Image (cartoon, rainbow over all chains, first blue to last red; front, side, top):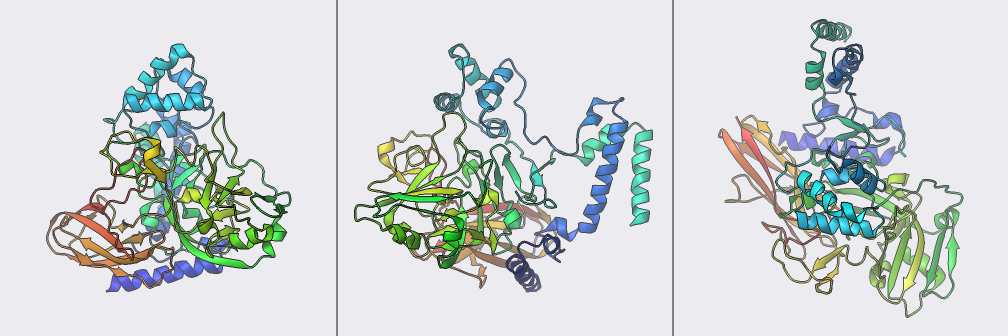
Length: 165
Length: 388
C-alpha cells in the first residue's frame, strides 16, 4: 500500500511539474522525492559527489598522461563512434559514415546474407563502394557484427543542464 | 560536504601518488560513458548522427513523459536551419484551392489537445530472433505527451478536399543524405479527417522542440510513430496511397504469419497503421537483486486505438496470474500506468511477467509475430530478479 501511495503522489507531482511549468529550467531541476525509479535524483547529493570525484579524476588522468595512454581517456564518450580495426576499416568509414555514424552499424547482429542486402541497399542509396571492395566489405561487416557477438552496449546521454535544441 | 570533498581529494591525490590513476579510471568510468546531447537527459543513445534516442524503461513512471525523456526517432538529419518566421506549410493536391499557411495562420485555428502514446513501429526490434536490421531498439522507443495544435481536418477544410482525395501525404524538412529516398508517407483520408488527428505545434504545453518536429508535426494518434511526420512542410491530398520507400517496402507487415527468418514478398504485406496491445515492466529492473518483502511491480500498457482493459502479472514465470491496478489517469490514445503490490516471500530467482489485454479483445502473445523488419514487437514482457 505505502509504496503505491508514495508513487502516486510522486506521479501527481511530476505531472503538475510537466504541465505547469514546462519551460522553466529552474523548476525542471527540482529534486523529486522519489522511489527507485529516479535513482539519480534520489541520490542527487551522492551524485554530485561522484561528479566531483569524476572531475578530480579527470584532472588526475591528465596529469598522469605521460605515464599511461589509458589515462588520457576522456570522461565522456566521443559523440560518434568508430568502426573496428581491420583491412576494410578505412573504406567502410568512407562508404558508410558519410551519411550516418558508426553506432548504426555497431548495434547490428546480422547474417552474411542480411549484410549483403544492407550493403546493396546502401550502395543504391549513395554509399560509394568500389565493386572490387564489395565482397571484402561484406566480410568485414559480417565478421565483426554477426548474430553470435554480444549485444552492443550503447552509452547514455547527458545534457540536462543545457538548453534543448 | 566540504569534508567529504577533502576526503575525495585525498583519495585522488593518493591514487596519483601510487600511479594507480589508470585502474581507478577504469573503475570510475566503466563502459557507461555518456555523450552530451543538449536537452536530452539520461537517454539511451542508439545513434548520434542522425539522432535516435531511447527512453530507459525506468522513466516509465510518469503518465506524461517529460520532453527531455521522450524518445527521439529520426530517419535522416534534422533540418539544419529552421526559422519560424520563414516556415510555411503548403497544402495542395486533390483540393479545391491550394493554400499556404504560416505559423501565425496556424495559431488562429482552434487548438485541440490529445494525450497520445507515440511508439516507433520498430520498438523492441532487438528482441526479435533471428535478429533483423534497423535501429536496435530495446523497450523504450515509446513515450506519452499531450500534443496540441489545430485539427488536420480544419486545415484541410480551408483548402477543400475534392471527392477524389483518398489519402493525405506528409512531407517533412528532414535533410536527406546521399541518394536516400525522402521521408514521405501518407495516411488514408478517414484517419486524416478524424477529430483527433492534429497538426501539432505544442507538446506538454510548450512549443515543439527541434528533436520533436518544431515548428509543426503531424500527430496521428494511436498509429505507429512514422505516421506523425515531423518538421511538416507539405501536405498533399492524393487519389491513392503515396508511392515511396517509406510506404513500401518500409513500414509494412506480413498479411499472414511467417516463419522466423523467412523472406516475405511485398505483395503479401500491408502498411502498418495502429499499434498493438503491449505492456512493459518499468520496475523492478531486469537483473535486480531485492530484499524479501514488499515489491512494487509497475509499468505502462498501451494499445494504439484501443483501450487497455486489463494488465496481469505473474511472479512465477507464467504459472499463475494476478490483476495489476490500473492508474486513474487515462485518455483514449494514452498508455495506462499500472502497478502490482507483490510480497516476495522466499529467497530465490524469479521471472516476473506482464500481459496486457485491450478493449478489442487482443492480448499480448507469449511470442511476438516475427517479421523481416521487426515491427510491432509485443510479446509478454519479462524481467528476471533475485530475492535475497
